[in-house]
Length: 432
Image (cartoon, rainbow, N blue to C red):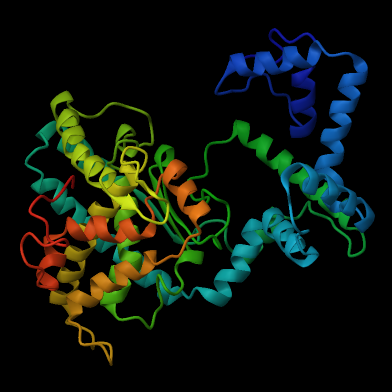
């Protein structure tokens, strides 16, 4: 839409043009109607109301950067309105500000100390193994027609992986150039924060006329304990923050590495072919590349997962899980585990097996599944458990273990679970 179109009260183009230091004629919004309502609401208020509203918004955005007496007043407001019990320690707040302001710089320092090049090489090789194995699973999918399968294979082949940190823009010189405009002092935190906010806003607005940087981490920083599939980039990022124990360590044996972080990688690959990721093509464009009959079959297979998890009763929350809200993650859990176990077995054929862990009377395959299960061990308060069941898209940890393992013939074989027993039910759900 064209800036200022229909908005007589605010000079939007002047505002954005000033921030971006360039003329901007158009911008995109998810909801033009919502923007219209908000701006018209502003224009209908009297000057006193606007001054109070803008004044409060301004003070609210700045108060945490001000001296202690102002922060104490703000804490009184938070305590009265939200029941906040304590002020965030200043050291923790300042650390958060540094991380938010210099995400790539902090990521550089972190990866130098906590994520070696050998680890990056190993995990990159692991992603190749798991991608290759998922290709085999796609080729074996008898329920999927050739046209849809060809599209799926093309998408799988073009998935872009970032392991730990991006290869581009991460040298010390590039990072120095990135922050060259952040001229700061050692004695004025408020001014430093204002300089940072302005520079970040300008850099973000200048991206309007730039192509998407496919090498940029989705969350901007490598320290996050996370892995993610980004639909519109056809990209999977495995952050350095998650490539730490208990998910990963160079010293872990292969069966733990594959069972733990390997299953996370398999999970993210499967997301590219679930109910949401499957709507995007190899270029990250929203496009229907499924044949109608294949999409219908996919939904039938997915329904098995929905029903399975909907029948789980979570005692800590006192209620059943919502199989619909969590189905995308549940499909990815089962598909990722299946793919990664197969990739691990192929690895063993190539290089042999690692030594068993001392003190445990468990086989290599059993330890693989133990490595997977330990990721999701958790203890929740009842309030947290209820919140997770009501609104989260991930199932509680207990069921992220139970569900995929109940669906896994490999697990049943490894642990010699009798047919028809709780962990080896006759009916198993298998989307991928």
